Image (cartoon, rainbow, N blue to C red; front, side, top):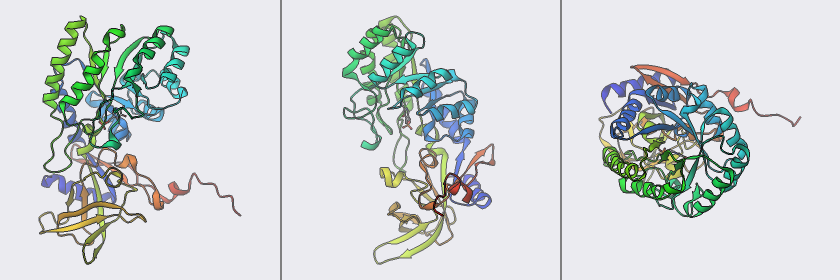
Length: 404
Ligand SMILES: *Cc1c(COP(=O)(O)O)cnc(C)c1O
């Protein structure tokens, strides 16, 4: 982290308090540019998977760069519209949702991917050939950082299992459906190019059965580095492999297919910093605990996924390293990092958790009746508050008191 960014984070904490999420717009733009460069040889579209971070200022920023928005709930779709995205730039990839929501997404004019035979039938009955539709398939490929974030394997709930493709084709014929897109999203934190190509091959084999097909949607799941020595998905290599694969398939079928991507983590993970303050240092026989003024109510990834988040001691960045176990202040085991070497930490120090842009604020809660953090965007060197911290009123406004 460069000195200038450090000073901006310190300033954000002073101005807006902690715990605080801070996002750097420049990093988001850089990530988007990496995608553009890597995929330049393809006919591609990018739809940012907004569930990673849905703040409307973030949606507006990403949309202004040229990306569409991918949604996983009807409210995310409405959020994308609210942020100024036109329906033709919105994709709704469903997963176990009710048919009512699919109908609503159609009424709002978004692209829709359907993930069950039952909803596909209902879609056929209601819309026939009047509205193009995509199919979310489960390719039976094990991919992604761990099982919790793996969505394409043969026991996963996501998508229509590819072995049921004949039933998809039957339903399509019965209702004269225009199936224009085949979609897969096999997991998150997929590092290997071969996994993407393997998924692609599964879809390519199905092309002859879908005469209206225009789009191959490969979902998201690009890996970004979390640990210092880790590497992300080699995007240029992936781009090259995809160009080659699409050239072949375009030639075979005499058609020019588009490829769509739905990156979430790739766009925002590294742009985000979660700032906390050290409440207590607790020395014990075996462990020195650093207790911060937050917990898994604000950043759940370490407890939920065993995720690693780098930590920077902004108050003493060049101090001598010591081993610490960094924990939260809520009434549950709540460990952010175990036996982590950090420059000497004192009570009152400001700690920044790295890679906090994706699935950070978005998965936060009010557990222990704590307030959700505020969010700040660094845009052209200026700090902008883009979400206020919760207040007491937020905690009680939906509750109804019935006991006299
Ligand atoms: C979550 C999700 C994504 C984004 O995944 P990342 O790992 O954040 O890139 C893309 N597409 C769909 C359908 C998703 O559910």
